[in-house]
Amino acid sequence: MKAAELDAADPLATYRDRFVGAESDLVYFDGNSLGRPLVATAERVREFVEHEWGGRLIRGWDEQWYELPLTLGDRIARTCLGAAPGQTFVGDSTTVILYKLMRTAVDGAGPGRDEIVVDDDNFPTDRYLVEGVAAERGLTVRWVEVDRASGVTEDQLAAVVGPRTALVTLSHVAYRSAHVADGAALTRVAHDAGAPVLWDLSHSVGSVPVELDAWGADYAAGCTYKYLNGGPGSPAFGYVAERHHGLTQPIQGWMGHADPFLMGPGYTPAPSVRRFISGTPPITGMLGLADMVDLLEEVGIDAVREKSRRLTAYAVDLADELLAPLGVVVASPRDPEQRGGHVTLLHPRMREVVATLWEEDVIPDYREPDGLRIGLSPLSTSFAEVERGLARIAELLA
Ligand SMILES: Cc1ncc(COP(=O)(O)O)c(C=O)c1O
Image (tube, rainbow, N blue to C red; front, side, top):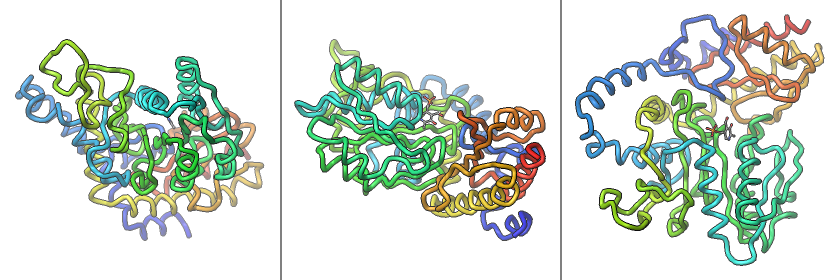
């Protein structure tokens, strides 16, 4: 089918108009790095400055900001994470939340558990943090070497976990290939060895449904500036299963205290998931993300995932037709069930191709080695954009 027919048949096509810039001819393939802003967010920010911040001033904290990291966390949990309320918070950067949860997990692991398991294709920040936490706590890193196209398998994980495992840390959707890990099965393998799992959901949340409670996941974190359209540097979310709320995290700040305004002499962590918060929450950074959660609640994550599957399938079909004859290799899974929201295409000239495309308002991104990544935001990307973008890549390579 042609792109115009696919757009005409798309039940979610009209949602594209809710995003800034939808009317332009620009081809945006980087919603998996930085989602487009919602039109509603411009009004929300103005309203916030004039009334909530400008009018309520410091009273805003009592009226709603103090609770916002937890109320918004619960809404992300319900809409995208398959998690019951009271386990999710919004706060620092993804990196800082991952650090806090890694330290929480390894410090809470039983005696003799002195290894962290991570795969060598995990996102750089996750790998670097694992190395740092291991050095800090005298632990050993157990690397799983993975085939980038298929991610960590159950057998691979089963081979490295055991009575010494303090933590397994994995990404749900791989940042390079978009391979979707089997969250339930891998969590089970870790639990069979008595080890908790920390999931990085940065490339899943808002695009691929997640069932943290059903998986029995222990910890999770993820970005909100990708498919949650929170804007550059919007704060990340963290999830800690209720059964771990007795553990303590390493950045013991006053906002995680049981009674912050008591200003007491020592640190007593809040009895809830609030204890994983550290300092003053970045309220202004939560505005755009709250709008996107509203939209996801309206549309439903399953419908979003269905559109995502169709968009990536169309991109793969066009890559096979137009780009394979030019030597391009599809580096993402071909099975749509195993493929997240982006598609990676390999060719030795992709770095220069991406540089030229950016000058022409066709915006994918480049990931080493040789990878052009096409991030397809289900609610803001049209099939016509996919067609125009891939046709231009073909012209440049020809
Ligand atoms: C999978 C994954 N994890 C972590 C991060 C890092 O997040 P931050 O820079 O917000 O700390 C990213 C950023 O793109 C990511 O893609």
